Amino acid sequence: MELQNLERNFTPIDRAIAMMDEALRLATGQAPEPDRANPAGDLPAADLDEETRTHVAGLMRINHTGEICAQALYAGQAATARSEEVKEEMSLAAREEIDHLAWCESRLEELNSQPSLLNPLWYAGSFAIGAVAGLAGDGWSLGFLKETENQVEAHLQDHLGRLPSEDQRSNAILEQMKEDEAKHADMAEASGAYDLPQPVREAMRVASKVMKAVAYRI
Image (cartoon, rainbow, N blue to C red; front, top):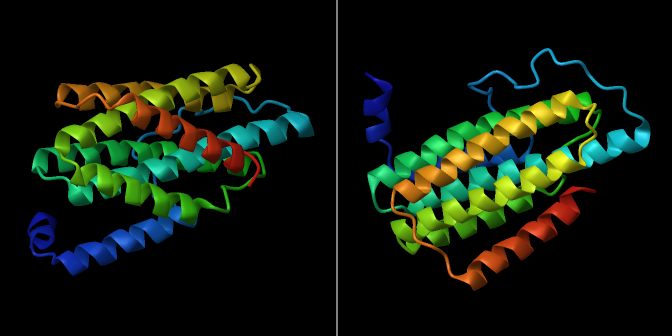
């Protein structure tokens, strides 16, 4: 029997169990294999002093945590989205974000560092937010996706300015991530995303600042 037919026979409990399994694997640092090659490729590793290495690791840990949050947001939105089209778009974005997650995790290993110890907490909170966004309706859910990606794109641009220029590997990863985030925001807008109210956008920025401040160190 084809996999697609098997998936159609999944009960809500089956899907919930699969979702929890995926959440546990992601939140505990067991990222799936990426579909695309790492943008860092064969670029040379920079000879970073300890202070710089720690700084770069902190930035990459923030980006890894951001991808954990993205996976949770998309999972929550897909779980409560009303149309199959929106569910598929959320799933597509999530699959591409898996690449980002794996690339950041690989770079952290190269820097002799580790992901945030609070990733299970970040995942749980982000899933809840995504589920609420999905319940609000597909237009609002897509609007939340668009605003999230716009803010992430700006955050990546900031990190690119804070990375040492000689660290070609980290720079290459963030450049590709930034390009993908812009594409996801465009996809959401083309699909009918609503513009979020200013207070909601500001609340998202505040939450992001808290996450970045904590994930940089823990």
